Length: 455
Image 1: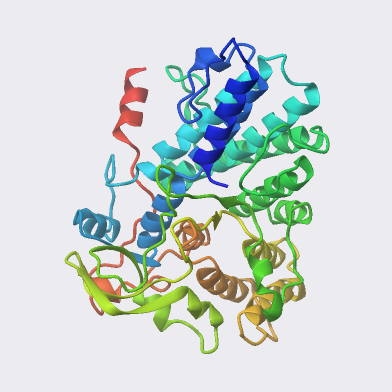
Image 2: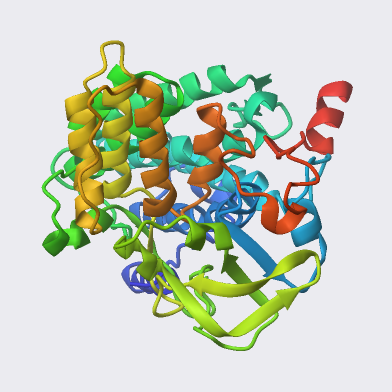
C-alpha cells in the first residue's frame, strides 16, 4: 500500500466520523504543533505515524549514492552537476559539502517527526497506556535509527542527539557518546514495545506490524549499533531477540531478504530512488563500480545484481565508461529493505569472530550460510585468525550488502581498512593512483559551527 493512499484514506475516515464537526487533519509530513500537542485524537496520531514512515525513507538514496561513491561501490553518473564526480570521488570535504543533506538534514526531519509523535501521545487522553506504549516504542525505534545516518556521515565530528527544542538544541556529542545514546534509546523503545500488548493502535506499511514483531526490528537495529560500538556480546544478545534466521539455503534464498522495508509509490508519492530502466540511454544513472565486477568470485550468483549495458554511458568527471547498472529492481515502486536477514547473519559472523573469546566455528558457520546460498563453497581456515576472518566477512558484506545505504564505506572505516588496499582507486586516479587519500567523514556543517559560536 502506498503512503499517499494511506494518508488519503485516514483523512476520509476523519471526515466521515466527525459528521457536523470537522476535525482539522494534520499534514503528516509537516505537522502543526498546535494541532496535535494538545489532546490529539487517535486519527491524528495515526497520521503522524504515517508521516514518520514516509519521512524515514529520505536518507536511503544519499547514503547509497554518496557513501557508496566514497568507497567505490558505485559511480554517480549524474550529468546535472560535475561535483557528483569531482567531489564524491575526491579526497577531502568542506563545510556544507555538496549534495550531503540527505544523510544529515533529512534524517533530523524524521527525528523531529518522532519527537512530535512522542509528545502528542504523552499529551493526550485518547489512548490507553498500552496503546501509548506502542506508539512511543515505534517512535523511539525510528528516531534511534534515523540518528545513525548523520552520525555515520559526521563520524568523529559527532552529532546532536537532543534536538527536541529547535532554538535550544543540546550539544554536539562525540561518536562513542552518540552511539551509546542511540543504543539507550533503542533499549527504552524495547521496554515500551514489551508493554504495548498484542497489537498496535496503528498500521505500518514496512511490515512487522505488531509490537512483538516490531520488537524484532528494534533488536536487529540494536545488533547493528552494538557492532558499530564493538560490543560483540551485546550484538549477539540483540540478534537472539531479532528476526535472524540461519536456515537459509540456495533453494530458500528469499529468506535473505526478510526485513522491514521502505515503501515507494508513483507520483505524488516518492519513487524507488535506485530504480533505473535497464539499458535505457541516459545521462543520469548510478553505475556499478567496475571493481565490483573484477573482484567477483566464479560462481557467485550475487552477480545477478549487476546488469551489463550494451548502451554504455559516459560522464566527464569520471574517466571510465558506465557498463553495469543496478539490476535488483523491476519497477519504480519496488520496496527496499532497510535491515534484513542477510545483514544479521553477517553481524553474527563478525561478532562471533571478534568477541573476547572468538568462536571461529560459529563465525564460519554463519559465513558459509551466506557463501553457500550464493553458490560458493565453504570458507575454511585451519589456523584462523581474527584479522583473516574479518577480511572474509567484509568481502561477503561487500557483495551481500552492495548499494544498501553505504555499508562498504562504514565497514572499512570502522575496521581500520579504509585505504587503497581495500578500495580500488586505479579506475579514477590512475595506476598507480595519483593519490590514495579517501574521504573518512563529511565536514561539519557551517550552520552547526556558527550556532555553537554564537549561542
